[in-house]
Length: 281
Ligand code: MN
Ligand code: MN
Image (cartoon, rainbow, N blue to C red; front, side, top):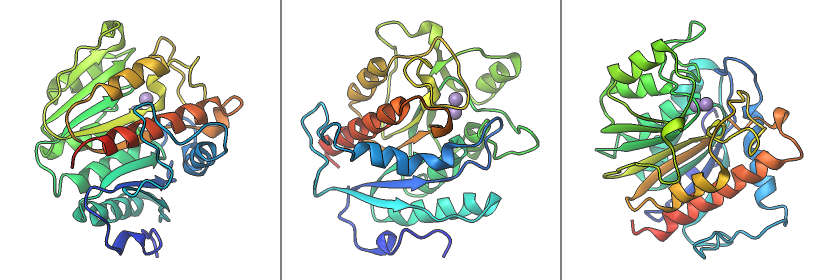
């Protein structure tokens, strides 16, 4: 079976359960492969005993009744994978699960958001990334990891896209930001307080390269001058609107140094899940 999570995707989940799923897919990476290897390594780091499963808000993921790890999707290749991801997430979303995805490259965000907007209206996406990922097509592919937010915005099913941490924009990217009415808060405008104003249900799309490579060397595209781990945590912890889904993408184990980036990804997993669990659903 192609888009299975064992049988877990079809068993009765308690509404509001935060489900962790790995999407080991990097076929649409433009520069280096590697992020497909990320989900098991992030999990292993989470459970290796070097730190507890307790987040900073006091919520412990260990045996939490509303936190469930459903493992990794088994996927076909190419566009069939995009469809399989959408189907699998759609089944979970129909059970009112809150989805936490471990990528994979950023191309996985389009099918995940497509699935969520099938049941959730007025979604605001908060994208933390060095890059806008808004190209119409890249290297001849509309599904490239450089394109997911163009695919999402052209559907018209998302209320708003807010990007934080972007740096090194070229003219084509600026035109795309304008075309799709994106709120782009460039890294150079991110002082100690980042001016975001969120409304309604929120989806967090966290590309690990939003961080400065000093904090997260394990990414395909090193873009110096990025955020610190702590400023990303501040941002996540400050969200008051309901978080209905999130992804952590673009961790590339082949580029990591001593598992440092895996530890940061595991920390983000813990803090995003605990933030969701702390919210009423
Ligand atoms: Mn990205
Ligand atoms: Mn990026």
